[in-house]
Image (tube, rainbow, N blue to C red):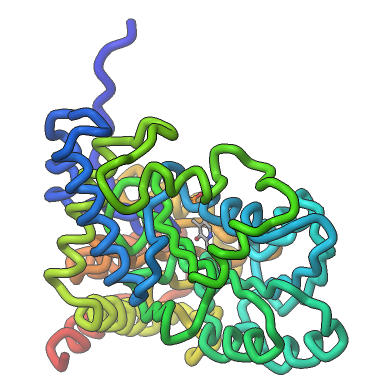
Length: 393
Ligand SMILES: *Cc1c(COP(=O)(O)O)cnc(C)c1O
């Protein structure tokens, strides 16, 4: 017999969704009101202003799309690309590969530049490609590659692309609020994110921002945007300025209550404090896991604090370990993707999940479970190593 669904509470330390803050869950349980109710429109306006704050942008077109991060990606490409446009994709993991797929599907002329998985994108690679392809219209890349735990230098890449007269699309799904995202400082044209990573919010929305330059391009296209739902010219009829909002689709009202609360919390904490918190918890996790003898996959200077790739010790069945963590500790960590499947774990410290109690839980649980499976690790030192990072912070 089917009854009310009652999920077991878990600690979410994978690549997303991450732990949702209780304040946000409470906000989402408030009464649903009409999506054109004046009170709701006030909420929408506040969301836009706070989103500009976390993206560090003055872009008027800054809204949450009513669909997950993948919709933000698709909206970026479908609005900017016209058939035949040349697009450079800088790929260093799974999500860059999805960008390339978007270019192919929307009729773009794809130039795909690949970097080894686990390494940041090399700006010199872009410089050479821009010289070889002076007719490039768009350059796109992932700032924080969740499949590899790597951060690339978005500022240098955007500046180089602009100097060559290109527009830029930057995926900040995993970076927003977890480390610095500076849309106006970078001069990025289209940037999108997701709510379920460092915003501590439930999955399902995609914060999205577009520069004047990119917005005017979508208004003067020769061909209509080939997605009706994601056509920014239509979406802005609903999310745009003023009280005459035209119905486009029914906004996910309660999900937006959650995002409003998440943005309020990010604003209260302050962006620099949030980045520092993510960095500190990463240092604590690293100290604990290294004391156990585990190794990090990504070179230190290119690592994300919010998503840690840890190498699976020789002879250990990584899936068995994840199952034991979930079964005995209600703790979820992520598996490796693509060429890294079976070789690494992906441990997220995103948003509300980035806190000391989670680091302590993860380190102690992993030590116990690895010891049980006879992995050769150092025992009894990890928790002290974690505590000493917090003590000296
Ligand atoms: C999670 C993620 C996405 C996709 O977001 P969804 O909300 O799962 O659609 C896109 N890009 C990156 C870098 C991500 O980590």
